[in-house]
Image 1 (cartoon, rainbow over the protein chains, first blue to last red):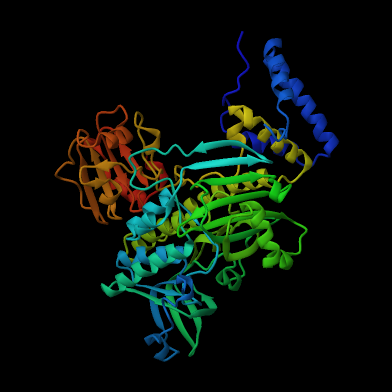
Image 2 (cartoon, rainbow over the protein chains, first blue to last red):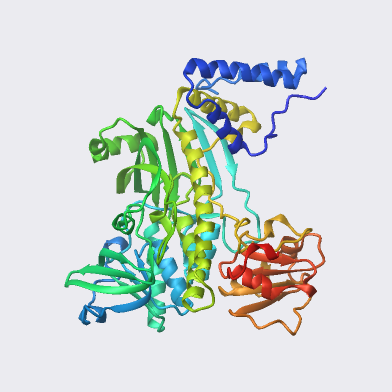
Length: 71
Length: 540
């Protein structure tokens, strides 16, 4: 069973990020949120492994956008 | 103390062209408008190749205030080739950057420089110092008899374009005069009067944001690192940058947002508290320069319009994130000078100048792409884009995978002209870094550095083995360099990889034109003709 990959694994990160921004271009906030939800489900299906997905859910949950001041 | 940017370095002086019969004006092979870093680089390069050059500038001193500060390795190599290598020693070298988000540090990074290069990945140096070094170099060349003139307080007022020359009317403190030029190079900046007078396009994107830029002089124990903040406590919801320059001058960039009162924000009573909040209450500093800027990413559709050629900011403009303005401008000059010299001296046709446009438009697009991406990360243009940006920053603090997605400006790297019709042929089995079109990597050689051996000429670099004694006559000077790989192991690794030997044809701008693994059959005449744009692509 492979572990969740948390080291760099993405080729051309800048290009990917630009494409990610471009796919949201012209959408309302609600449409963007819906797109993001669909994208998560598509990627989850691609990953397949429940263990990996659980580790990913955990990693996302634990990463607050602004850490507490004592972090 | 009088600053270098307050001193007239090329004061107005009457020249012989002003006393001619104005119905029969002087004709010059090359006239350059603008004595900034791009115009000076082109002028020094051309004059060094024996091409007479007149530089016209409406001012008489180096540029004032905050402009370029980060000069990248490739630019330092070009400056060194032009006799301005002092810039590297004067500059501040840095290789650590830190990214902060809110109150905390997200991560630090090291540029992880490759060893064994003469010049570092970057130095920070005020543009006025670079210009001063270049003006001094130009004046040394003039003293040695080089065909070069810098005419201060000579402002071009009208430009008449013709099939085979350009006609200029020039205003001076002593009245107007006329000259003609076979070739005009416009290095007159982002607001290029040349471009305006010729009614040429300059389209692109405006970014709706304002930045306060301040150069402050302070004695502070901040380390020599690049610090970038997203949403810092002293500039909530915006970004900030702190970067060191020589002489205890620090560059500070504070994002202000779009809806501000620009005049009010520039006043010391607004600026000083902002900076004090950033630097801490105990740090004493004085302001050297403050301004507020907005920026655009745009370029001219064509860099060559008949006998008028645009280089630097006059041809393309980028956001400051990633240091691609002055760096790419000097790289324009590097690309143009040898080509224009070859055309003026009859070694090549105007087709070679079209390759300048092709190669540097490609580079400009690469720079615009990179700086646009950085700008969008720093200034998210929608709620969704801010959401992802903040998610990346949050993840990057804990997880290494997200760090390459953090974009506070990518380092300026030179473009490889792989798709240019001057480039080729290539061969399998040699390293990717030395593929045709790429700038040649430096390496130590027994007497110094490889790049110092090239002399700004076409070179045939022979790594292991010897050039045949019967090399054909070439239309341009060709320098043959022999490298014994046992004497230069780093060079051998960079230029051979696993191959036993190779030959490289190098352009005068130190880009690789072609390479061969079996150099005994090397079609030198053909490759050189291609690199001078004297033949079609199809014969590779």
